[in-house]
Image (cartoon, rainbow, N blue to C red; front, side, top):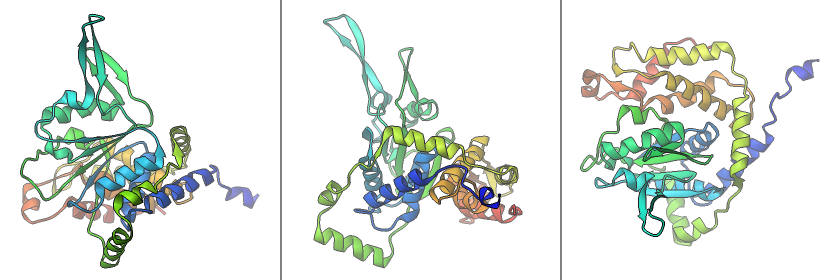
Length: 325
């Protein structure tokens, strides 16, 4: 009787094996950056889009490309620039003189993993073209609605330092990203290994070593397993307490939406599954919360002038709430 009590309700062996295979393939090229890779994989399992922020040269774009190579799905890359038009992203209708009809030519967003490089370089009109596709996985062009194939995931990068020729992303668009991952510089030991590996073999040769280890239909199966994970009611109260705490905090001008609460729930389920559990712990929630919330909050002008960050406020809110036991 006691043995049944502790029996896994969901078989996660296949999921854990898939995660290890993906980490192994990406690790053939990427040194360190464990949190970025872990959150990228959690984003896939939670069916969410991801924004990666970091200075140039810390392997943001490379990691996204390697992720697409290790999964047997479609991949496209869009370099955002100030002159990019919405039709350059979604596609355009072209007149066919032979048949005397307009035919739709799909844009690069019609893929499975879409890498958007330097997303904050395109103006609001082009950013708005992503609203429908990111939320509803569909595109409406000339009154016609076209569904995108599953799985669909946007991985976007941006540089936090450079301001020239960049645009502030609309809050409604930021809210559509599950995670905002901050990528830091490698440690001295990691940087030595990066340089040594490059000395031994150039990057293109290393990328060639990465092979697909997961199929599209397997991703859907793994996502279904993640959805079945057990979450106690007191943990859902914990999530909602954190998110509602952002809406009346003196340091914040804008708090998080209910979409953030759902994001924390889905992300903590994915993380728990990756860690071999079919139930969520408070530690899972605390781990994913900063990445789910940091891009959804707007600091008050006073706090910005003091040099505070949204991460500081998130930690303060989480620390003020009793952790469920």
